[in-house]
Length: 72
Image 1 (cartoon, one colour):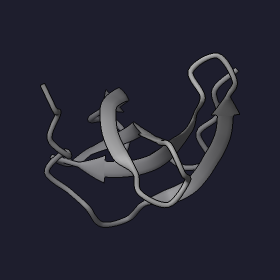
Image 2 (spheres, helix red, strand yellow):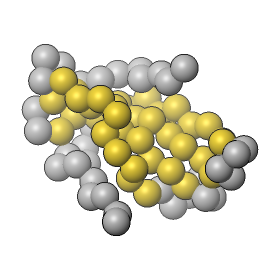
Image 3 (cartoon, helix red, strand yellow):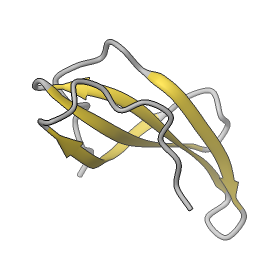
Image 4 (cartoon, one colour):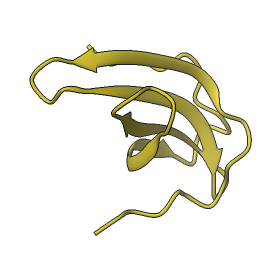
């Protein structure tokens, strides 16, 4: 089942892209805001050109925007 993009497609910030050798695809996390919450979104891609939304990794109404997300 394909997940839908959250209800905000503006204000994408500070993408962090990496390639996963085990899954043979790219991933990116992006700072965003939706539903008046700061959020970190996860996308994946086979070619780093066409991206598919995967999930919201984090969202918090205390923040208007999440900037410079990192995943360690």
